[in-house]
Structures are given as structure tokens and as C-alpha cells.
Image 1 (cartoon, helix red, strand yellow):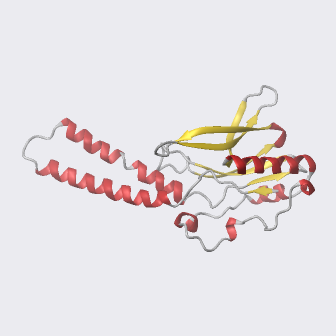
Image 2: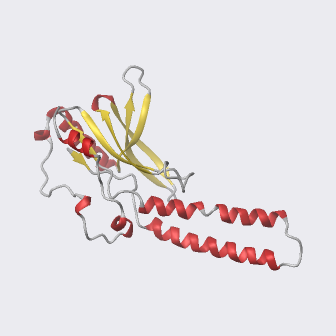
Image 3: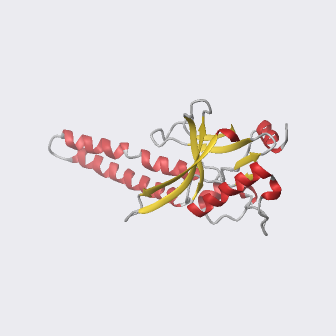
Length: 220
């Protein structure tokens, strides 16, 4: 069984914000540098620091652009009841290293189902006047010590998270016949061709490693 997943709750706005921010910062740097060059008095330390700050803020549009445009269309999770394992397609990024190649990219990982623990999280996000954000994490636990070895987002939104987790438990414990049947087939983002969202239109498609793709679909 495969469930869709996305660590980004919304996409598209970041790319436009990145362009606007980059233009604003570039114009600010040019205007401020011209003012320093043509001013009659000596250049002060405060003026130089201010210019350095403008240049350093350039990491923000780079981060927003890469986050919006490089994330795949989906980050699915596959559940294999016969092997009692799950396979996770993950997009990793690091906001402090916007130009790094190693800190950004897609990885496919597998974990033992029996070593997983679901964690319901509720936090207040930066949404102007404040907003409650609810989601479920899956923690990979060392069975001998109980130490959390890894943690990643399973689903966002309380209703969807509870539904997806219930489906995963039914499938892994009782089999595919226990999973509710839906009138419409699940959405395959790889086959979508008409994206109004610019980020999803140019986002990389999901491509599992061949060996993992075969293993996750078969029994031992």
C-alpha cells in the first residue's frame, strides 16, 4: 500500500516571493553601494555593516526558490505487509546551507514497521495572528533502548493524519481486505499534466531506486 505525503503544506508562493525578494535586495544593494561611492564624507563602519547585512540576506530568496522548485511532486510512503517494512521517499533540505548540494536532495529509506511509533504534534505556527498546526510524526525507535533514531512527518492535519494512520494499521495488521474501498483511485502525482501551480508543474517526479522499487512491491 502506498500513501501520498508532502512535507510542504503549500507550494507556489515561495517561488514568487523568492523572485520579488531577490529583486528588492539587488536594487537595495546597488542603490546603497552607489550612495557610498558618491558620498562626500568618509565611509562609516555602520554603513559597511548595513551593506554586508543586505548581501547576507540574499540566502533567503535562494532558500525559498529551492524549497519550492526542487521538492518532488510527492513524498510517498509504501507499506509492505509481507516484509513488515515501510519505504519512505524523503526530500531533505537545510536552510542554513542554501547553496549546498549535499544538504539538499531526495533520499529513499526503509524501516521496520515494528520499530515505528506515531506521535501526534500540535504547535502554533507563524500565521500572522497565530495558527494551530497539527500533524503526525513517525519516530523510528531502537527496540532495546527506546531511543529515537530518526523522525519524519507522516501526514499533516488532524483528520487526514488519523485517517492515514488508521489505514496503515489496518493494512499492516489485517491485510488489504481490511482497508476501506474508495470510489476513486488514489491520485498519482507523477501522471498529472495540468498543474496550475508553477512549483508543482516543474517539480521533479517521484523516482524510486530500482532495487527498492522492486523490493517494496514484492514479498520475500
